[in-house]
Image 1: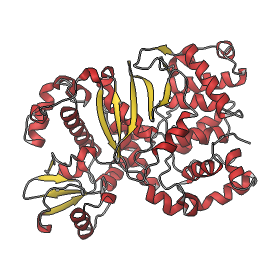
Image 2 (image 1 turned 90 degrees about the vertical axis):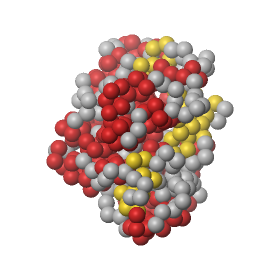
Image 3 (image 1 turned 180 degrees about the horizontal axis):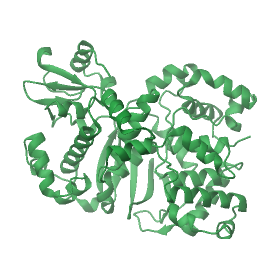
Image 4 (image 1 turned 135 degrees about the horizontal axis):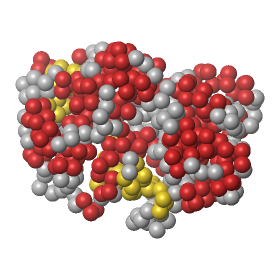
Length: 477
């Protein structure tokens, strides 16, 4: 991505929030890089250079500003095929910072070659994948040190450094400081939970988004109450809870201390669920009058891919309310009990491995017809055996084909899963009753043709069509 230096400097001098997360400003006189919204005294144009990512700024030798904190900048949404692949790989990195990642494994997950991934990363982020990974680990460690009371050894492990010594060495080499220098005088207590802010680009219609989620919460697993979203979490052997509430241009997220080892993956799940990397202005431009009444509408994602996919299968050709009831029964029967601060949240949704081991009769006893029980088991087995990936990093068309190859999953279900679990902005379940009703009860073919003008944001168009009817019924024809 090429940047116009003059335009970038204008954005920096005016603190233009539209450029936040898209441009980072390196100041050679201080060796520091900032976000465009930083309120420090504006440096001269001659000492400023501009970068498409924090990783590119750090690769050029700059250290992050302690005032505007580049690690808090909003993320980016992809707008074309090449960008989609690069951002999918970047999303996998962000969700698995503590893992032993390689370019080969990343490329394999998004369905391209190592060489192609390196080229796309260079085009999108200005650095190689390894440089991006290093910066993301450093910035996460910086964030945990600044915002939490976690022991430095736990910070090192959560950010993927493996040891305290490795963390100290990286900080000294890249930031010219010791990690403990970021510890403030007042730090949150671990017993109170771990608190984070996740930025987004306004407008953001939080109320409408949690209203959508509220009608689809799985009893015992999720809850919307007192204007906030809550859920249980089961991730890589760790269990806990989280809560999300609105803040000023950011969501405020609290995690149970038991999730400290998997903070990157949990925060990545929240970003997916609330579609925090969306560019609402780009969507508005593409959808035009359809989106004008609801410019802050987001595309609800999925915190857990298998959970969302099972919920989608349970919801085939029945109402949203009936699907919610079935999903609650399913979770209560096969999930894991957990204690949380809220009595109503007491269950972790079962893992793909647990679901794959169930029999058709066990699921059918909970009011699920046998054919759908068979689909759920086959779906879970494909995920458990790593034959199917239900997250934004998955190759979209291949995943949709894999889903439709499973007995009982048709185009509507496959596209609905792609729309939410894969966060694919161009998914379009055109046989959906609500979509056709909003378009004047046209045929499925007419609905498909009408949607061509909304590419590559057809999934957002679906959300707007459902919203125009009131409560979305998301029922296929």
